Structures are given as C-alpha cells and as structure tokens.
Image 1 (spheres, helix red, strand yellow):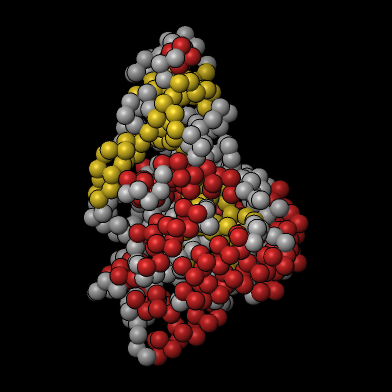
Image 2: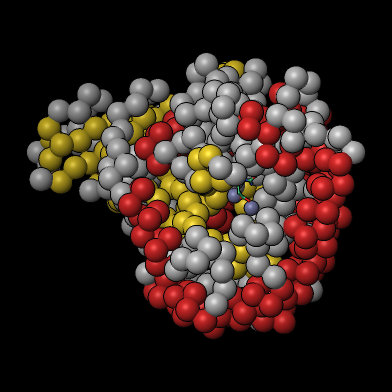
Length: 480
Ligand code: URP
Ligand code: ZN
Ligand code: ZN
C-alpha cells in the first residue's frame, strides 16, 4: 500500500523559485507540485483528510502550510558527531546530533570520518559507519579526513570515491595530529584531479601558529582570547593562498572550509575571478559572533574557541559580502560541541588545551533566516547556501537540497513569523551551553519530513534513531 502526504497552501521556496504551490509526496519522494487552487492541486487531496485516515489509494495525510514557507530540508555539509579531539570527544552522538539537526530543519548531514595516524582510510570509514548506522534520525553521508598521505591512502581514495565518499579533508594546521605538508597535499590533490574527488582544506598555517602559541604561553597569555590572537587572519590568508596555488598546479578543484578572515575571502575571490574551481564555506559563528565573545570573562570565552577562530567584528561584513557575490557558496555549521563543564574546562590556564569547536547544527537554518529578515540575503539565497549548493557541492543534488519531482521528500514547513529565543534550556543539542544564548530570532521550524516520514510534527519530535540512512554521493556537481 502506498503512502501519500500533501503539503497544502504554503509558499514553496527553492534556490531558483518561490511559488504558491501544493506538494504531493508519495512513497518518500516528491511526486508533484501544482499551483495552489488549480484542479491539479485539488486532485492531490482527493480521498485524504487533515487527520490522516486511510484513503482509497493508501494511507495519507494533509499538512496545512497556510502562511508558512515550504522549503527543502537543510543540508549541513560539515559536522563532527562524537569526534575525538584534544583528549575528549564531541558531546553529540550521531543520535543526539541528528535529532537536534532535525529540530533545526536540517535533514542531511555530511560528517567527517577520520583516518587515524598509522591507520587506513578504510579503517577510519568503517569506524564512522559503525558509529552512525542505526542511530541517525536523518540521512547522513561522509567526507574522509586524510591524516596520512602515502601510496596506500592515495589508492584508497579511488575506492572511496566509488563508494560515494567523494570528498577529502586535509589540514594545514594541527602539526602532529591531522597536519599534511605541502607535498602530501599536492599528492592528494593530484589524485583527486584524477578520481573526481574534492579536496576540502583547513587553511591555517599550523607550523607558524604553533610558534606563536608557544610564545604566547611563555608570556603568560593563557586566556581563551589568545586563541584568536595567535591564529592570525594573515596565517589563514597565507594558507588559503597556498592551497589555491597547489590545487591550481594539481588541476584539482578546492573547497576551503570554515573561512573566517576577510583576507582569506579576498584570496578566494581573486582565484574565482581567474576562473578557478575554488569554493569557500563559512559558518554562522563567523557571521554572528566575534572576538568579543572570545574575550568574555571568567573563562566563558572558551565556549567560543574554534579553528579557524572567531575574528574581530569587521570581518563579518566581508563574509556577508562574499555570500552575496558568491565568492562564498556554502554556510555549514562545523558542529563540534564540547560541554563547558568538564570539556572546555580542560583548557583553564592554557588556551591551547581547550577543545576546538562550537555547537550549531540546530541553529543554522534559523540564523540564516534571520539574515533574510534583516535584509542581508534573499529567501532564495538562504535556500541556496543552506540546502541547494551544499547538495550540489557534495554530489547529492537533486535528491537533496530542492523540492522537485523525484527528489527525496526532505521538506520543512517553516513559520517565518514565529519568534524564538535561542537557549541551552530549550535546544536539543547534547551540550550545556548555547553559543547564541538569549539571541532573539524570527522564524522557526514547525514540521519536518525526512524521505516522507514526519520527524518533527508541529514542534513535537516523532522521528526515530535508525530512520536516517547512509547516502552515497556522486562527485562534485558545482564545477565550472
Ligand atoms: O574548531 C573546529 N573547527 N573544530 C572542528 C575540527 C575542524 O577543524 O573542523
Ligand atoms: Zn577544520
Ligand atoms: Zn570541522
């Protein structure tokens, strides 16, 4: 027996269109859209009712979206659920983190599997599959962090691309942990140029930063704010420039993750003006928070320690501009939550021991909607940077990231007028603080469907661990 859901009366917003249309969902996919009030739309609801009794064709339900937006589920291309880091582990499991994502209107995450030093890509990927399988509320995919480029891992990259793990993160930071030198980076880029993979770069000059860390600590500068001071914008820009040039030499596309410095945006813009396949992601924390937060007293600044670091407020304008000019294409969260109590506290007296990362998987769609309300971006650009482009960038489109016949029915009914106050008291992430505590935003997720299953029903969680499935990806669909 087939299942059928109709979302009626809303404004359907995709990256390309805004139309008053009813949406017909059958067997987990978008079956059709029809302009509201037309006979085609009326036919969607024949035999169905608001409360969901059986129809002659099967079970069905009508969701009234009058006065609401009907948008594709968010695609968060950068998360770290239960990631080991700095002697501790990110506090959200795949279960709690994907549930929180659903609450925030995100229906797909792309998380980072990690190759341990001395281990293979296969071992790392298998370990991440084991953590995620059977636990996720929404669909998930993986990037692979390559910590050790050698002949074996280069060959493994080809196999992973075939399995739908088509992007590889490398680090120019964290010497002795994830760091790759320029030769290793070039080799991985050359391989990606051959196999269609996308290299994602953590672009900070980690060798130089470690010198500055040592010098700061020797001067007794141990507070969280020094994390921001030693990880200089110029060292992000320098690494971004170097990564671009290495990618150019290799003939490979490049995606720079968590861009925070205006000087790094300028490097990306220059490369794009030259026609290179170079892309940039920023994150809500860089758009909405600043070094003012890192400087909060009583070690509270530790809540905002992440890398690349938060920057002085002036950098925000360059990031917003980059999003408007498409020099930055994607906003992901880099969700990597550590509780203040017991985890961030590991770095009291030494900022370099504060685990790096912020919570945010639940907040991204709302914060970006606030940018729409504030007139910074249009509604369609909101959907483009949060849903459609990450789906294209990471080979998930049009299955994910849009509302079109044949796509997975990952759909959010969004109330653009509801008011909310972000708080650790009310959020669903497994972390004891909110980076946006007390922030008022307009707009809120009301109902969320993942492949046609209702996971949030008028602000009640109806999902389940294990509904979310691993989603293999094609290669990047965003190249020039
Ligand atoms: O501080 C951050 N960004 N933590 C997560 C790891 C990474 O570099 O993305
Ligand atoms: Zn990174
Ligand atoms: Zn990250």
